[in-house]
Image 1 (cartoon, rainbow, N blue to C red):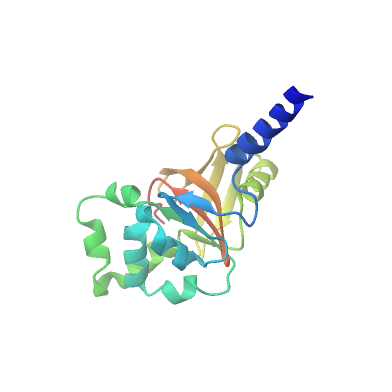
Image 2 (cartoon, rainbow, N blue to C red):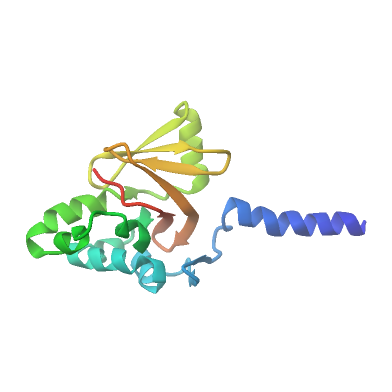
Length: 184
């Protein structure tokens, strides 16, 4: 009986860590709690790993949109992901004359609706190994499984972004943290 209780506790704790957070629970991103009662922008501002994302969202004038009712699914590149872009790219994109280009890139990271790991994985399975997700930008990103519990996102240029943190539930959607900027 004691072994069964220990096993049940292990599965409960370990299982949640592997599968993502239960709905309504906060998730740690960059060492900070992302609270499901806050919206996408409010949580992103609190993430030390998403300072560049917050800066470019402000420069593109998308703060109000991402604070809206949604629901939205945001594939959120980390600061390290932005750092992988060619030198000077971010500085060039935040200039007022490049607002349209910046907006096109950022809205390529947003899919209307609430797409959790399970929802995306279901679409991949029913799509024969791939799921085309239409972004707010109007273009598609492709989601594919890369192992039993790992989804990768393929952009229009063929680059792959790994999702490092799934199902960061927000009051107006969900965030998945990715390791590179996807480009339309």
